[in-house]
Image 1 (tube, rainbow over the protein chains, first blue to last red):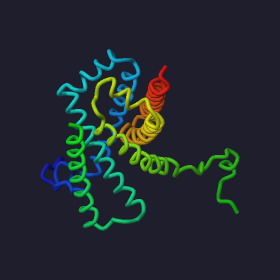
Image 2: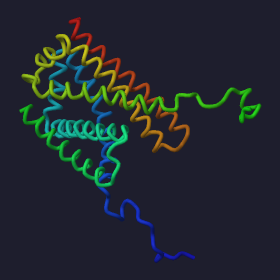
Image 3: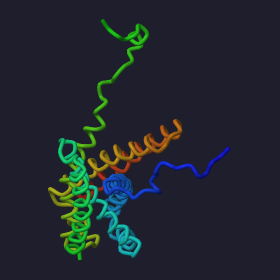
Image 4: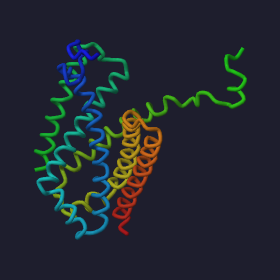
Length: 125
Length: 126
């Protein structure tokens, strides 16, 4: 006999995500994104070592809209993972575990990653 | 008095005393990546341009090739540790997990070596 009306315990699709959960998931997601970015970094080096013609093909892909979106994504992923990684190191040292502190540092990491990404692209252009 | 069973003692099984190795490796390479990554981000942003000549002019002269090799190797190491944890968390079939871990390890080493070779080729001017 099934009873579809019984109460369910909250799951990720039901309740509002705490911001600390968002930062935790993003840390892993940005890390995986940059593992892919590492491959592109090596391609950049290899094409640079292969000469101007090979480099032009790489450069064409990276300057396309698709490539630019990826580069903006990777730059944000880097600054996010950097800021949140420092947050993790502070935790490892034993500080910042209070709920209010963890929430505040989560927002600080998110805001600073966006600001640093914006500064990066302003300097690039 | 030892609490270990005679069989366990004979087989020599037990803790390998390196249980915290992964944790420390991730933290220490993370600290290195913070410094090397920031250097690379600032260098990329302040490059005069992004042509082939600009790239070679950045990669070639010291100390940049040395720093780039450190970056490439540290990135491969740090990425390998991170991807390893993700595979261990999400791939539940034992065979597929083992295969994925081996492929990931091989790939990280191959890309690190290709990157280092490319940097040396430009840096030494071969």
